[in-house]
Image (cartoon, rainbow, N blue to C red):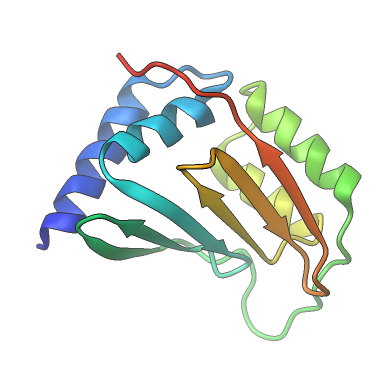
Length: 138
């Protein structure tokens, strides 16, 4: 196992154990940033997550949201924002958030831990950028 994987796994485990149910993403993001993760790029519906870290890149392959040939949903900004707010309120699981984002037409998103932004992309170049607050990690 590489040092990058060890660092990422430890940060993810710490964040999962300590983050609040509502508003937990900024806590997760800050935990990852402090561990040396600079970016996280998600590809939907494959649920592939690429982490760019100071120790090297790491990929996590999650369970895909779709298999085979599938139509790509149209990008719906309002549906994406609704999915974000539901997740931020602690009213959905991460898998439910990913599925809702996909149904809202998100094909990928990019988390910039330095700028504290998440950019969501549709397949025709549509995008929605949301900043998240800085938090203190205990």
